[in-house]
Amino acid sequence: MLKEFKKFVLRGNVVDLAVGVVIGTAFGAVVTALVRDIFTPLIAAIGGQHDFSSMHFTLHHSTFLYGDFINALIAFLSIAVVIFFFVVQPLNHVQTLATRSKTPVEPADRKCPECLSEIPKAATRCKFCTSRVTPVTK
Image (tube, rainbow, N blue to C red):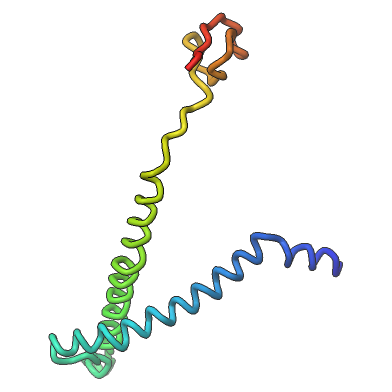
């Protein structure tokens, strides 16, 4: 039983997942601090108020704290904007630059003209319908 547990824990995808969770947590803390310490004061400077938690209304002796919801919504939108513009967009740009330099790989297979099955380019006969095909020499 201990050997099975060791095998499970040391499997590649479990370790990768653990590393991803740890890095994600650390990255989340950085983004949260960026939003809380930089963007929220900017919103307060523009809008005049940065803490809406005290906002509420009462209806039939029930208090609705909609200010907390507004705070959470602003935090979510701010984090989403920061992630998109400072993480997703730069990574997409880097990936575009990385794939631009690669030459496209020519497929090794083609379709049989008779049965439309995938066959190798160099084949002279279809392995599915056995019809004769001319090989592609490119």
